[in-house]
Length: 203
Image (cartoon, rainbow, N blue to C red):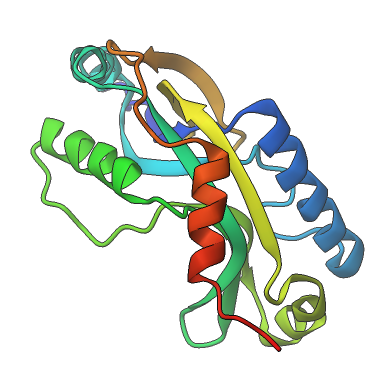
């Protein structure tokens, strides 16, 4: 019996070209300090969902997502700073935060609902470097501590990527355009003012 072909599938939001360029600049800075690291050459993105399954389910997967996309409205993603968190007992991750996570979180929940999966813990972000050790993190901390990264981009689609389950690079196989490409979000200027009002005042 022929063995089924398994793929590692991922759904992502791709930022606009300017945000990608700015994030890539920070990735380059990290690579200069650490050398090659986990995720150094990946395209900047916000991950929405990831799963491994046989290729024969791919078209069903795509049709379900196309139906979902027609019901979605565009929104604006805002970022405000570079942040970090712990990964396991000794790992660290550096990332660009999403300052208005609710629209992305809602999209994540709708995708899980489409596949009849229960909602799980989820924090939208753009990864800079993951699984770095404490020594590496301490080396990078002076560059990124309290580093502001105020950007915004219009999100009107998400993309389906895949790679062989045994390894390789992700390739984009489908982009899903939202059916209602209208965004009533506030402007970046208004958002920046709101962020500044929340920042602590320093003497």
